[in-house]
Amino acid sequence: MDKNSNDDCIGHETGGRRKFINHLRRNFVIYIITIIIFAYIVSIFVTGEISINSTQIVNLLFLLAIYAGLIYVFIGLFKCFLKLRNK
Image 1 (cartoon, rainbow, N blue to C red):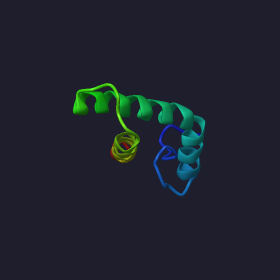
Image 2: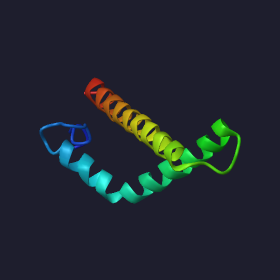
Image 3: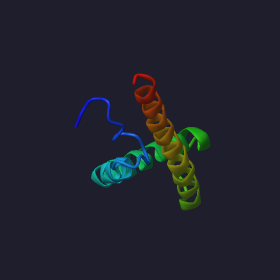
Image 4: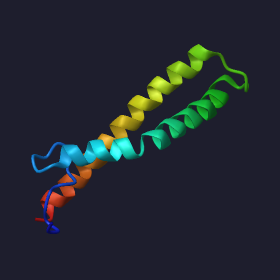
């Protein structure tokens, strides 16, 4: 594989989507644990108390998962843009 290939780009025809999905499979547990920890920390700051109910944690998990997904996609697209620009 040469340095100028676009295999890291999300959704690229040359296997980028497969690499992206494999990356998610390898790191899935780490992402879930990180999101749960961030949701708990954010809920402590938002509510001001350590005891939280289940609806709050579910709502925060959902929001954090959306934000983490968006950030991850934008980082991937930015890397693709830089690779294409450097060609």
